[in-house]
Amino acid sequence: MLSQQLQVFLQVADCGSFTKAARRLMITPASVMKHINTLEGRLGVTLFKRDKKGVVLTAAGRSLVQDGKKMAALAKNAEARAKRAEQEEGIVIRVGSSLLNPSKALTDLWGPLRAAYPQYKFHIVPYTDTKEERLAIIAALGEKFDLLVGAFDSKRILTQANYLILGDYHLCVAVPKGHRLAAKKVLSIQDLHGERLIKVKRGETERLDHFQDILQLTHPQIIVEEADYYYDLDTFNACEQNGALLLTLDAWAEIHPSLITLPVQWDYTVPYGILYAKEPSQEVLQFLQILKSALPE
Image 1 (cartoon, rainbow, N blue to C red):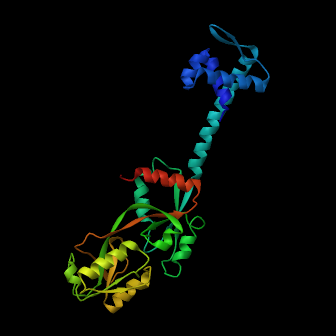
Image 2 (image 1 turned 90 degrees about the vertical axis):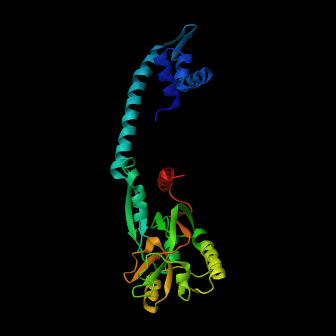
Image 3 (image 1 turned 90 degrees about the horizontal axis):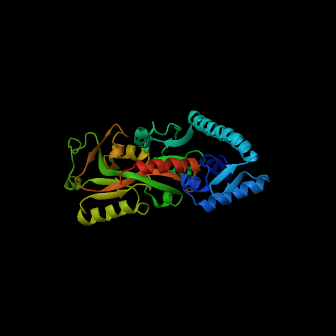
């Protein structure tokens, strides 16, 4: 908080030498001398008498040392008080949370970091997963929400927001209770032959489009049907009511009480992460940088 010239002056006064002060400050003696000359010129006084042995404070210099040390102590106390005030007030991060995209993935990840960064506090903002409102929710980033957490690997969404990848969810299949496959622990792809499998509409998510291409090429016996570009609770309800299977995520295993989410013997995943505004606040950027540094390589 002190000016650089005053900080250099106090070091020279303490060391009694431009050279010693330069070593302590890790700058050149010429730079030290330049700062002192600038300060003397600004104040209109001579602060040091210079000779071959070093420098000696003048009366003006001794006076400035006394006041400068008081200013340095005040600045240090002011900085400490500002940090305490920030920790007490906290930096509020508004996190959206919904049935399909709950905030828990983020709060669990932040748990081990909470003690080191107590100034960050979460304000959970609930929202509803509907196809009609999805893009409006994304547009509210930076205004109503700072962050959204979930699987947002969508071309349209990623043109409107930034995405920090945290990990991957596994593609699973949800089957209605009472279905012939419901008693299984793990499904083979052959188990799906002759079944209607609902997935998101082609054209929005490249990874799922590729999955559909491979599946229909290698297992044409599976009847792939497309829902909308995004799921909502109605998508799960429809599968339960009409007996169809639903391509889903392991993270959504508890979404619908009448559907059983089962792993399948394949290695398909989709990324999940944190969605944030194209131009986030500095506080949000700092929070994300802390979080990013804690992620495994």
